Image (cartoon, rainbow, N blue to C red; front, top):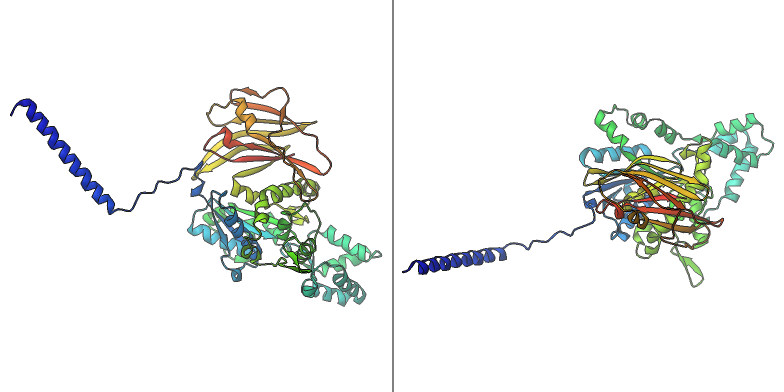
Length: 474
Protein backbone atom coordinates (compact mmCIF):
# COMPACT_ATOMS: atom_id res chain seq x y z
CA UNK A 1 0.00 0.00 0.00
CA UNK A 2 1.37 3.42 -0.90
CA UNK A 3 2.17 6.13 1.60
CA UNK A 4 -0.82 8.19 0.46
CA UNK A 5 -3.19 5.23 0.74
CA UNK A 6 -1.92 4.44 4.25
CA UNK A 7 -2.56 8.03 5.32
CA UNK A 8 -6.11 7.90 3.94
CA UNK A 9 -6.70 4.61 5.76
CA UNK A 10 -5.51 6.10 9.09
CA UNK A 11 -7.83 9.11 8.66
CA UNK A 12 -10.73 6.79 7.85
CA UNK A 13 -10.04 4.68 10.96
CA UNK A 14 -9.78 7.82 13.09
CA UNK A 15 -13.15 9.05 11.81
CA UNK A 16 -14.68 5.65 12.54
CA UNK A 17 -13.38 5.73 16.12
CA UNK A 18 -14.68 9.27 16.63
CA UNK A 19 -18.08 8.38 15.17
CA UNK A 20 -18.21 5.32 17.41
CA UNK A 21 -17.32 7.43 20.48
CA UNK A 22 -19.98 10.01 19.61
CA UNK A 23 -22.58 7.27 19.17
CA UNK A 24 -21.60 5.77 22.53
CA UNK A 25 -21.83 9.21 24.23
CA UNK A 26 -25.19 9.82 22.58
CA UNK A 27 -26.51 6.50 23.89
CA UNK A 28 -25.21 7.27 27.39
CA UNK A 29 -26.83 10.71 27.28
CA UNK A 30 -30.17 9.11 26.62
CA UNK A 31 -29.92 7.61 30.09
CA UNK A 32 -29.06 10.97 31.73
CA UNK A 33 -31.63 13.64 32.73
CA UNK A 34 -31.68 16.62 30.38
CA UNK A 35 -29.56 19.61 31.38
CA UNK A 36 -31.68 22.67 32.06
CA UNK A 37 -30.00 25.93 31.22
CA UNK A 38 -30.36 28.43 34.04
CA UNK A 39 -32.28 31.56 33.17
CA UNK A 40 -30.05 34.60 33.12
CA UNK A 41 -31.25 37.48 35.25
CA UNK A 42 -30.31 41.11 35.59
CA UNK A 43 -28.82 40.47 39.00
CA UNK A 44 -28.10 37.75 41.50
CA UNK A 45 -30.88 38.58 43.92
CA UNK A 46 -32.21 35.04 43.72
CA UNK A 47 -29.48 34.14 46.19
CA UNK A 48 -31.01 36.50 48.76
CA UNK A 49 -33.52 35.56 51.42
CA UNK A 50 -35.43 38.06 53.53
CA UNK A 51 -36.86 36.83 56.84
CA UNK A 52 -40.00 38.61 58.06
CA UNK A 53 -41.12 37.85 61.60
CA UNK A 54 -44.63 39.20 62.20
CA UNK A 55 -46.39 40.00 65.44
CA UNK A 56 -49.86 38.94 64.33
CA UNK A 57 -51.80 36.86 61.85
CA UNK A 58 -52.87 39.82 59.71
CA UNK A 59 -49.28 40.93 59.09
CA UNK A 60 -48.13 37.40 58.19
CA UNK A 61 -51.12 36.92 55.88
CA UNK A 62 -50.43 40.23 54.14
CA UNK A 63 -46.78 39.50 53.36
CA UNK A 64 -47.48 35.91 52.30
CA UNK A 65 -50.16 37.13 49.89
CA UNK A 66 -48.01 40.02 48.68
CA UNK A 67 -45.10 37.76 47.75
CA UNK A 68 -47.50 35.42 45.90
CA UNK A 69 -49.33 38.14 43.98
CA UNK A 70 -46.14 40.05 43.07
CA UNK A 71 -43.90 37.00 42.64
CA UNK A 72 -43.17 37.98 39.02
CA UNK A 73 -41.61 41.23 40.24
CA UNK A 74 -39.81 40.15 43.41
CA UNK A 75 -36.37 38.63 42.72
CA UNK A 76 -35.97 37.46 46.30
CA UNK A 77 -36.83 34.52 48.46
CA UNK A 78 -39.13 35.64 51.26
CA UNK A 79 -39.69 33.64 54.42
CA UNK A 80 -42.58 34.78 56.61
CA UNK A 81 -43.24 33.76 60.22
CA UNK A 82 -45.45 32.64 61.87
CA UNK A 83 -46.22 29.88 59.38
CA UNK A 84 -49.54 29.01 61.02
CA UNK A 85 -52.20 31.44 62.35
CA UNK A 86 -52.36 29.79 65.77
CA UNK A 87 -48.62 30.43 66.26
CA UNK A 88 -48.87 34.23 66.32
CA UNK A 89 -46.34 35.94 68.58
CA UNK A 90 -47.66 38.00 71.47
CA UNK A 91 -44.83 40.39 72.29
CA UNK A 92 -41.92 42.29 70.84
CA UNK A 93 -39.56 40.25 73.02
CA UNK A 94 -40.88 37.04 71.46
CA UNK A 95 -40.37 38.45 67.96
CA UNK A 96 -36.73 39.19 68.73
CA UNK A 97 -36.28 35.76 70.31
CA UNK A 98 -37.64 34.04 67.19
CA UNK A 99 -35.52 36.19 64.86
CA UNK A 100 -32.37 35.42 66.87
CA UNK A 101 -33.13 31.71 66.78
CA UNK A 102 -33.42 31.78 62.99
CA UNK A 103 -30.22 33.81 62.63
CA UNK A 104 -28.30 31.22 64.65
CA UNK A 105 -29.15 28.51 62.10
CA UNK A 106 -29.46 30.39 58.79
CA UNK A 107 -27.95 33.22 56.78
CA UNK A 108 -30.33 35.96 55.63
CA UNK A 109 -29.86 38.97 53.42
CA UNK A 110 -32.13 40.96 55.75
CA UNK A 111 -34.18 40.21 58.87
CA UNK A 112 -37.28 42.27 59.61
CA UNK A 113 -39.65 42.39 62.56
CA UNK A 114 -43.14 43.67 61.72
CA UNK A 115 -44.96 45.14 64.68
CA UNK A 116 -47.30 47.93 65.71
CA UNK A 117 -47.82 49.96 68.85
CA UNK A 118 -51.35 49.53 70.13
CA UNK A 119 -50.30 47.64 73.24
CA UNK A 120 -46.51 47.84 73.33
CA UNK A 121 -46.01 51.48 74.28
CA UNK A 122 -49.24 53.26 75.13
CA UNK A 123 -51.57 54.54 77.81
CA UNK A 124 -54.22 51.84 77.69
CA UNK A 125 -57.65 53.11 78.66
CA UNK A 126 -59.32 49.72 79.17
CA UNK A 127 -61.72 48.28 81.74
CA UNK A 128 -59.05 47.63 84.44
CA UNK A 129 -57.84 51.23 84.08
CA UNK A 130 -61.37 52.63 84.43
CA UNK A 131 -62.00 50.36 87.44
CA UNK A 132 -58.94 51.84 89.18
CA UNK A 133 -60.11 55.37 88.32
CA UNK A 134 -63.56 54.48 89.67
CA UNK A 135 -62.03 53.90 93.12
CA UNK A 136 -60.67 57.42 92.96
CA UNK A 137 -63.77 59.06 91.45
CA UNK A 138 -67.01 57.31 90.46
CA UNK A 139 -68.05 60.36 88.41
CA UNK A 140 -64.90 60.37 86.32
CA UNK A 141 -65.11 56.65 85.68
CA UNK A 142 -68.75 57.00 84.62
CA UNK A 143 -67.92 59.67 82.05
CA UNK A 144 -65.05 57.57 80.68
CA UNK A 145 -67.23 54.45 80.32
CA UNK A 146 -69.95 56.46 78.61
CA UNK A 147 -67.37 57.94 76.24
CA UNK A 148 -66.12 54.46 75.32
CA UNK A 149 -69.66 53.35 74.46
CA UNK A 150 -70.81 56.44 72.58
CA UNK A 151 -67.76 57.76 70.79
CA UNK A 152 -65.73 54.76 69.68
CA UNK A 153 -66.33 53.81 66.05
CA UNK A 154 -66.29 50.02 66.23
CA UNK A 155 -68.55 47.32 64.83
CA UNK A 156 -71.70 46.83 66.87
CA UNK A 157 -71.26 43.06 67.06
CA UNK A 158 -67.84 43.36 68.71
CA UNK A 159 -68.15 46.62 70.63
CA UNK A 160 -67.95 44.96 74.03
CA UNK A 161 -64.38 43.73 73.51
CA UNK A 162 -63.31 46.69 71.39
CA UNK A 163 -63.79 49.60 73.78
CA UNK A 164 -60.11 50.15 74.44
CA UNK A 165 -58.40 53.42 73.59
CA UNK A 166 -54.63 53.71 73.19
CA UNK A 167 -52.72 56.97 73.57
CA UNK A 168 -49.08 56.92 72.48
CA UNK A 169 -48.02 60.16 74.15
CA UNK A 170 -48.91 61.79 77.45
CA UNK A 171 -49.80 65.06 75.67
CA UNK A 172 -52.25 63.16 73.47
CA UNK A 173 -53.84 61.47 76.50
CA UNK A 174 -54.01 64.67 78.56
CA UNK A 175 -55.68 66.55 75.68
CA UNK A 176 -58.31 63.80 75.52
CA UNK A 177 -58.95 64.05 79.28
CA UNK A 178 -59.07 67.83 79.20
CA UNK A 179 -61.74 67.66 76.51
CA UNK A 180 -63.86 65.32 78.66
CA UNK A 181 -63.20 67.16 81.94
CA UNK A 182 -62.68 70.89 81.19
CA UNK A 183 -62.38 71.80 84.89
CA UNK A 184 -59.76 69.17 85.70
CA UNK A 185 -56.81 70.50 87.72
CA UNK A 186 -53.21 69.51 87.01
CA UNK A 187 -53.12 67.32 90.13
CA UNK A 188 -56.36 65.55 89.20
CA UNK A 189 -55.08 65.01 85.65
CA UNK A 190 -51.90 63.44 87.01
CA UNK A 191 -53.98 61.12 89.22
CA UNK A 192 -55.98 59.78 86.26
CA UNK A 193 -52.83 59.30 84.18
CA UNK A 194 -51.10 57.41 87.00
CA UNK A 195 -54.08 55.02 87.32
CA UNK A 196 -54.06 54.19 83.60
CA UNK A 197 -52.23 51.12 82.36
CA UNK A 198 -48.96 52.08 80.64
CA UNK A 199 -46.53 49.89 78.69
CA UNK A 200 -42.97 50.94 77.88
CA UNK A 201 -41.61 48.30 75.52
CA UNK A 202 -40.75 50.63 72.66
CA UNK A 203 -39.03 53.06 74.99
CA UNK A 204 -36.77 50.23 76.10
CA UNK A 205 -36.00 49.05 72.60
CA UNK A 206 -35.23 52.62 71.56
CA UNK A 207 -32.69 52.99 74.36
CA UNK A 208 -30.87 49.71 73.89
CA UNK A 209 -32.21 46.71 72.03
CA UNK A 210 -29.68 44.42 73.72
CA UNK A 211 -30.78 45.47 77.21
CA UNK A 212 -34.37 45.11 76.12
CA UNK A 213 -33.75 41.51 75.14
CA UNK A 214 -31.88 40.75 78.37
CA UNK A 215 -34.71 42.23 80.41
CA UNK A 216 -37.20 39.72 79.02
CA UNK A 217 -35.00 36.66 78.56
CA UNK A 218 -32.90 36.98 81.72
CA UNK A 219 -29.67 35.86 80.09
CA UNK A 220 -26.44 37.43 78.90
CA UNK A 221 -25.86 37.80 75.17
CA UNK A 222 -22.59 36.71 73.63
CA UNK A 223 -20.95 38.86 70.94
CA UNK A 224 -22.50 36.85 68.11
CA UNK A 225 -26.02 37.30 69.47
CA UNK A 226 -25.42 41.00 70.07
CA UNK A 227 -24.27 41.38 66.46
CA UNK A 228 -27.39 39.59 65.23
CA UNK A 229 -29.56 41.99 67.22
CA UNK A 230 -27.91 44.99 65.59
CA UNK A 231 -28.83 43.60 62.15
CA UNK A 232 -32.55 43.23 62.88
CA UNK A 233 -34.73 45.91 61.25
CA UNK A 234 -38.18 46.97 62.40
CA UNK A 235 -41.10 47.71 60.07
CA UNK A 236 -43.37 49.66 62.36
CA UNK A 237 -46.85 51.13 62.15
CA UNK A 238 -49.04 53.03 64.61
CA UNK A 239 -51.44 52.69 66.00
CA UNK A 240 -52.06 49.47 64.16
CA UNK A 241 -50.77 47.61 61.08
CA UNK A 242 -54.20 48.31 59.59
CA UNK A 243 -53.03 51.87 58.88
CA UNK A 244 -50.61 50.42 56.31
CA UNK A 245 -53.56 48.56 54.75
CA UNK A 246 -55.58 51.78 54.68
CA UNK A 247 -52.82 53.53 52.71
CA UNK A 248 -53.48 51.12 49.83
CA UNK A 249 -56.78 52.96 49.33
CA UNK A 250 -56.27 56.56 50.43
CA UNK A 251 -54.00 59.09 52.05
CA UNK A 252 -55.12 59.26 55.68
CA UNK A 253 -53.55 60.82 58.79
CA UNK A 254 -56.41 60.18 61.22
CA UNK A 255 -55.32 59.15 64.72
CA UNK A 256 -57.46 56.04 65.26
CA UNK A 257 -57.69 54.77 68.85
CA UNK A 258 -57.29 51.05 68.08
CA UNK A 259 -57.33 48.47 65.29
CA UNK A 260 -61.06 47.82 65.63
CA UNK A 261 -61.79 51.38 64.58
CA UNK A 262 -59.97 50.68 61.32
CA UNK A 263 -62.27 47.71 60.68
CA UNK A 264 -65.32 49.94 61.18
CA UNK A 265 -63.78 52.48 58.79
CA UNK A 266 -63.07 49.81 56.16
CA UNK A 267 -66.74 48.76 56.37
CA UNK A 268 -67.99 52.33 56.03
CA UNK A 269 -65.89 52.81 52.88
CA UNK A 270 -66.65 49.31 51.53
CA UNK A 271 -62.92 48.89 50.90
CA UNK A 272 -62.73 45.13 51.41
CA UNK A 273 -66.21 44.05 50.43
CA UNK A 274 -69.19 44.59 48.20
CA UNK A 275 -72.93 45.09 48.46
CA UNK A 276 -75.07 42.22 47.18
CA UNK A 277 -78.88 42.43 47.27
CA UNK A 278 -78.68 45.37 49.64
CA UNK A 279 -76.42 43.59 52.13
CA UNK A 280 -72.72 44.34 52.64
CA UNK A 281 -70.70 41.12 52.44
CA UNK A 282 -67.05 40.04 52.56
CA UNK A 283 -66.06 42.67 55.09
CA UNK A 284 -62.48 42.74 56.33
CA UNK A 285 -61.57 40.29 59.07
CA UNK A 286 -58.37 40.23 61.09
CA UNK A 287 -56.15 37.19 60.69
CA UNK A 288 -55.63 35.24 57.48
CA UNK A 289 -58.43 37.00 55.59
CA UNK A 290 -55.91 38.70 53.26
CA UNK A 291 -54.20 35.47 52.23
CA UNK A 292 -57.41 33.50 51.83
CA UNK A 293 -58.84 36.22 49.56
CA UNK A 294 -55.65 37.16 47.69
CA UNK A 295 -57.14 36.37 44.25
CA UNK A 296 -60.17 38.58 44.80
CA UNK A 297 -57.94 41.26 46.35
CA UNK A 298 -55.26 41.16 43.67
CA UNK A 299 -55.73 44.86 42.73
CA UNK A 300 -55.27 45.74 46.42
CA UNK A 301 -51.81 44.12 46.51
CA UNK A 302 -50.88 45.54 43.11
CA UNK A 303 -51.50 49.03 44.55
CA UNK A 304 -48.79 48.47 47.14
CA UNK A 305 -46.17 50.53 45.30
CA UNK A 306 -48.34 52.97 43.38
CA UNK A 307 -50.47 54.02 46.37
CA UNK A 308 -49.42 52.60 49.73
CA UNK A 309 -45.70 53.38 49.41
CA UNK A 310 -46.39 56.82 47.93
CA UNK A 311 -48.92 57.74 50.60
CA UNK A 312 -46.64 56.41 53.36
CA UNK A 313 -43.85 58.68 52.13
CA UNK A 314 -46.23 61.63 52.12
CA UNK A 315 -47.51 60.72 55.60
CA UNK A 316 -43.95 60.66 56.91
CA UNK A 317 -43.06 64.04 55.41
CA UNK A 318 -46.33 65.80 56.12
CA UNK A 319 -47.30 64.33 59.50
CA UNK A 320 -44.37 62.59 61.20
CA UNK A 321 -41.43 64.86 60.42
CA UNK A 322 -42.94 67.95 62.14
CA UNK A 323 -43.50 65.87 65.30
CA UNK A 324 -40.06 64.28 65.16
CA UNK A 325 -38.59 67.76 64.80
CA UNK A 326 -40.06 68.88 68.14
CA UNK A 327 -38.66 65.85 69.96
CA UNK A 328 -41.28 63.10 69.78
CA UNK A 329 -40.08 59.54 69.18
CA UNK A 330 -41.45 57.59 66.26
CA UNK A 331 -43.34 55.31 68.66
CA UNK A 332 -45.14 58.31 70.18
CA UNK A 333 -46.73 59.46 66.91
CA UNK A 334 -50.19 58.41 65.76
CA UNK A 335 -50.42 57.63 62.91
CA UNK A 336 -46.94 56.55 61.87
CA UNK A 337 -45.89 54.01 59.26
CA UNK A 338 -42.51 53.01 57.82
CA UNK A 339 -43.45 49.64 56.30
CA UNK A 340 -42.53 51.09 52.90
CA UNK A 341 -38.84 50.53 53.72
CA UNK A 342 -39.50 46.79 53.91
CA UNK A 343 -41.39 46.96 50.60
CA UNK A 344 -38.35 48.78 49.19
CA UNK A 345 -36.22 45.76 50.05
CA UNK A 346 -38.64 43.60 48.03
CA UNK A 347 -38.36 45.89 45.02
CA UNK A 348 -34.66 46.80 45.39
CA UNK A 349 -35.60 50.41 46.09
CA UNK A 350 -34.16 52.84 48.63
CA UNK A 351 -36.15 55.86 49.82
CA UNK A 352 -34.23 59.08 50.44
CA UNK A 353 -35.11 62.51 51.79
CA UNK A 354 -34.13 65.89 50.42
CA UNK A 355 -31.86 67.86 52.74
CA UNK A 356 -30.00 64.73 53.84
CA UNK A 357 -26.48 63.47 53.17
CA UNK A 358 -25.86 59.82 52.32
CA UNK A 359 -22.30 58.56 52.67
CA UNK A 360 -22.84 55.76 50.20
CA UNK A 361 -25.52 54.01 48.19
CA UNK A 362 -24.74 50.35 47.67
CA UNK A 363 -26.24 47.09 46.50
CA UNK A 364 -25.38 43.54 47.51
CA UNK A 365 -24.83 40.98 44.78
CA UNK A 366 -24.93 37.45 46.18
CA UNK A 367 -23.50 38.74 49.42
CA UNK A 368 -20.85 40.93 47.76
CA UNK A 369 -21.23 44.64 48.38
CA UNK A 370 -20.97 46.97 45.40
CA UNK A 371 -20.88 50.69 46.20
CA UNK A 372 -22.65 52.66 43.49
CA UNK A 373 -22.64 56.26 44.67
CA UNK A 374 -20.77 58.14 47.40
CA UNK A 375 -21.45 61.44 49.17
CA UNK A 376 -24.95 61.78 47.75
CA UNK A 377 -26.50 65.12 48.72
CA UNK A 378 -29.96 66.46 47.96
CA UNK A 379 -30.88 70.10 48.43
CA UNK A 380 -34.00 72.01 47.41
CA UNK A 381 -33.36 75.64 46.49
CA UNK A 382 -36.35 77.68 45.34
CA UNK A 383 -37.93 75.57 42.61
CA UNK A 384 -34.87 73.39 41.92
CA UNK A 385 -33.59 70.13 43.30
CA UNK A 386 -29.78 69.95 43.35
CA UNK A 387 -28.29 66.45 43.37
CA UNK A 388 -24.56 65.80 43.72
CA UNK A 389 -22.69 62.53 44.09
CA UNK A 390 -19.46 60.69 43.32
CA UNK A 391 -19.52 57.74 40.92
CA UNK A 392 -17.89 55.00 42.97
CA UNK A 393 -17.55 52.45 40.15
CA UNK A 394 -15.12 52.80 37.29
CA UNK A 395 -17.68 52.86 34.53
CA UNK A 396 -18.09 55.41 31.77
CA UNK A 397 -21.48 57.08 32.02
CA UNK A 398 -22.66 59.76 29.64
CA UNK A 399 -24.94 62.57 30.74
CA UNK A 400 -27.75 61.24 28.58
CA UNK A 401 -27.73 58.00 30.61
CA UNK A 402 -28.24 59.98 33.80
CA UNK A 403 -31.06 61.93 32.20
CA UNK A 404 -32.75 58.73 30.99
CA UNK A 405 -32.65 57.23 34.48
CA UNK A 406 -34.73 60.05 36.04
CA UNK A 407 -38.52 60.29 36.08
CA UNK A 408 -41.17 62.20 38.00
CA UNK A 409 -44.32 60.66 39.46
CA UNK A 410 -46.98 63.14 40.53
CA UNK A 411 -49.51 61.92 43.09
CA UNK A 412 -52.81 63.26 44.34
CA UNK A 413 -53.41 62.84 48.06
CA UNK A 414 -57.20 63.03 47.88
CA UNK A 415 -59.45 60.47 46.30
CA UNK A 416 -58.23 57.32 44.60
CA UNK A 417 -56.76 58.90 41.47
CA UNK A 418 -53.07 59.03 40.69
CA UNK A 419 -51.67 61.19 37.93
CA UNK A 420 -48.43 59.91 36.42
CA UNK A 421 -46.13 62.06 34.28
CA UNK A 422 -42.99 59.99 33.57
CA UNK A 423 -39.78 61.59 32.27
CA UNK A 424 -41.34 65.04 32.35
CA UNK A 425 -38.13 66.59 33.62
CA UNK A 426 -36.45 69.80 32.57
CA UNK A 427 -32.83 70.50 33.44
CA UNK A 428 -31.59 73.95 34.12
CA UNK A 429 -28.57 74.35 31.83
CA UNK A 430 -26.84 70.95 31.94
CA UNK A 431 -25.39 68.15 34.00
CA UNK A 432 -21.93 69.01 35.30
CA UNK A 433 -19.32 66.34 35.63
CA UNK A 434 -15.69 66.62 36.66
CA UNK A 435 -14.05 63.22 36.57
CA UNK A 436 -16.43 61.06 38.61
CA UNK A 437 -18.09 63.94 40.50
CA UNK A 438 -21.55 64.65 39.15
CA UNK A 439 -23.86 67.60 39.81
CA UNK A 440 -27.29 67.96 38.28
CA UNK A 441 -30.11 70.40 38.79
CA UNK A 442 -33.71 69.32 38.33
CA UNK A 443 -36.38 71.96 37.79
CA UNK A 444 -39.33 70.97 39.99
CA UNK A 445 -42.87 70.98 38.57
CA UNK A 446 -45.56 73.28 39.90
CA UNK A 447 -47.81 71.26 42.22
CA UNK A 448 -51.33 71.94 43.43
CA UNK A 449 -52.17 71.91 47.14
CA UNK A 450 -53.28 68.28 47.14
CA UNK A 451 -50.34 66.95 45.14
CA UNK A 452 -46.81 65.80 45.82
CA UNK A 453 -44.18 64.16 43.65
CA UNK A 454 -41.50 61.50 43.76
CA UNK A 455 -38.31 61.63 41.75
CA UNK A 456 -37.09 58.17 40.74
CA UNK A 457 -33.42 57.64 39.96
CA UNK A 458 -32.97 54.22 38.35
CA UNK A 459 -29.36 53.16 38.95
CA UNK A 460 -29.80 50.03 36.84
CA UNK A 461 -29.73 52.24 33.78
CA UNK A 462 -26.45 53.73 34.97
CA UNK A 463 -24.85 50.52 36.20
CA UNK A 464 -26.17 47.53 34.21
CA UNK A 465 -26.41 44.32 36.25
CA UNK A 466 -26.21 46.29 39.53
CA UNK A 467 -29.83 47.32 39.91
CA UNK A 468 -31.48 49.45 42.65
CA UNK A 469 -33.79 52.42 42.35
CA UNK A 470 -33.56 55.55 44.48
CA UNK A 471 -36.77 57.45 45.23
CA UNK A 472 -36.67 61.04 46.53
CA UNK A 473 -39.75 62.55 48.15
CA UNK A 474 -40.31 66.13 46.96
